[in-house]
Length: 173
Image (cartoon, rainbow, N blue to C red; front, side, top):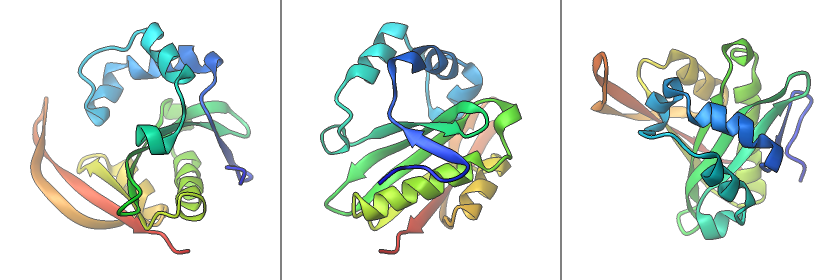
């Protein structure tokens, strides 16, 4: 299975991705949506790229999102992979504001959904989104994820407490 369509391609991380990942992972603006509290070193990112990319062993998988007309625009992750219950969490980042709202994230979610269903034989994917993150909420809905719950005052932010919305997508095989 090739993880691509006419808009985006999902691919494994490559050594040349280290500089982009270093920029993206160390931007405090992305930390608020990823629960990151400390910067990553190039060394640790290189180790991660060169590590075994086996979702069954690591219970996670990170793929680069490359747009046909723009190159690498972000990442999509499957985490908390649970083959027993046939589910995984999914998270994504389209880093540059100039690449957002172009459908890259929705297309990446569609490709990951197909991969999760057809290759990994998962029953569902889930995602948690901050209630104020309207762009991501709209994206999840466009990609076929349905709201399935709300965690009240779940996250502490600079603006105060914020709810988190839970989404899931039942995969059809």
